[in-house]
Image 1 (cartoon, rainbow, N blue to C red):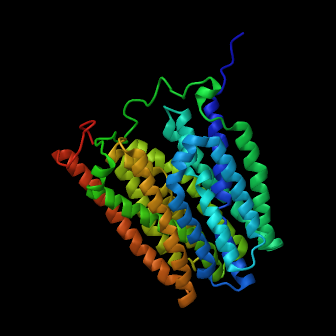
Image 2: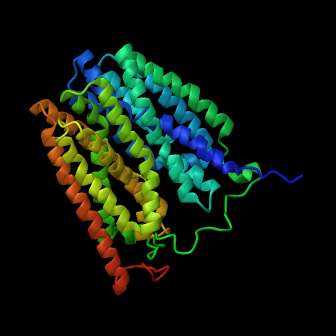
Image 3: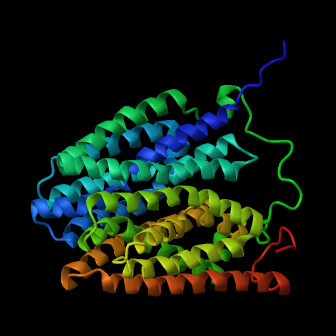
Length: 428
């Protein structure tokens, strides 16, 4: 009888990783928006006061992130995932008992300590262990779990709040997190293929000729050399601002749409569509970068970034909330796929972990500024309109930074002029 070919275990790792991010990021993080209005109305908090707990969380996670590299080396990915999943679930349960601002602030600090344990960084490392070929595709599928989880859980949690209350919704999420994450991590996550008697996935076919358009690393720079380039700072500013609008829209979209008269069901549907495009957008963006190059991918992120604040301003008209959901979902994907691709392209692999950690820390700071600031705009003006205008201005700056970095890159490759550069190839 013909032997049945077994499915490579790495694909099970990808499925498990998708579930982990669906709960760890999609549920715990993406549902934050639906709690703003009910919690503030129930406890009498200002929106800027309440959303400050997200600032505390993001600042804490950014400051502690460098520790995770050493922790993963010492304890392993599986242990980090287990501890992180347990603590994030317990913190979420803790929110259900909070009655004062300092309760939320303290829990947010603990949340920030363990936030990185169930994140893109850890999952990216895990999936990279298992794949040499199709690594980008595997990571993209795993990362899509964050948007998928949000798309499913935002309407579910909104309905729970509507039927019961926000305290029960926090309790529900925490218990669901424990019941889902712990078994998945315990029974499906294996640290490295070598420990399972396997080798990383390496397809003999690879890409067909002419299909892959992402430029190989022309430059191979150290961190100190990268810091001397204009491209580094242009990209850093661009990704910081992308993280700022992504954090602000994630938190304030639901209360804004509710304020202008849309029902809870309508708001949930719009946020769910946003999460759907945050999911499929990662795959779409990855395909565009693969097939058409980084300029095309950057243009898509920039154009969507310009559309969503305009759509928000006109969301009183029925069609525009849906345009907003699609465009902000696609634009927010600029924080996942492009970061890894553009860092590799512009600076190579010589100091990739250090450069990536700097970009990740900076992008973690974006929401810590934009979320409470957008809440303060509403508290003081009674409207989100000035904030949408400001986000439109930020999107223009993002477009300029992405375009300028690409132009400078192509010019340096063409003219062979850059300080401290070591070339790996001569094609851009």
